[in-house]
Amino acid sequence: MTRQVIIPAGGMGERLGEALPKALVPLCGIPLLVRTLSAFLPLGLADTAVVTIPAGHESSIAALLEEAFPDNHITLVPGGVERQDSVRNALAALRSDTELVAIHDAARPFVTGDAVEASFEAAARVGAATVAVPAIDTILVSDGDGYLSETPDRSTVWYCQTPQTFQVAIIREAHETALRKSFQGTDDATLVRRCGQSVKLVRGDFTNLKVTTPTDMTIAETFIEKNLVCV
Ligand code: CTP
Ligand code: MG
Image (cartoon, rainbow, N blue to C red; front, side, top):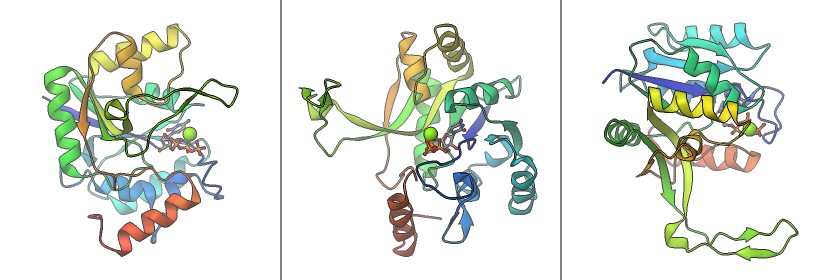
């Protein structure tokens, strides 16, 4: 099946607190977005990438990607207010013959080719898949007033990661439904599940962390320095 990749990179990285948008922040000298896109090069998918970018950074990101990936034509689309808006913009920019799309956050530079391929394989079979890892910590659900409401059985709890990979018609319909119902989610698989579609959980790696806070930057640098990730 024909495949493409969407890389949401349109956020400002407020929790990281740097002057630059998070995708442009260097991690051991290389901007996060460049590291993340590089993970798709050996799979032959960098050429298919649709990257959402923050307003005001169009020319700097275009120049950065031209320099880092001179042989690949990467499509840039405007980011939206929320991540979900950015992904919707990117879905509209897919090639008309694309059948499967993997959506992978720019903020996760250490994704492995195996995880990407496993998510495509599951999405081709089931329609929708998300990479995830089994929870280590017990998860507590609060009642909203700071008291414990319930404790889900840990063996059923997984931490969400990306890529989340879909048959294109399924993810497009899920985004249209979410827009119509004014539902905002923090990931795409949840939108698909709300439409009644099965979503396969594909076991990933704990090293596929999302760089969100300054502490995550320190962890990510340590992963690189200790050769715990292939980059
Ligand atoms: N993203 C996006 N468009 C937005 C918001 C987020 O494309 N309007 C992207 C980010 O660039 C990131 C991914 O979605 O690669 C996951 O979002 P997150 O880690 O929350 O990044 P930011 O929104 O940039 O960070 P913060 O929430 O701390 O501001
Ligand atoms: Mg965010």
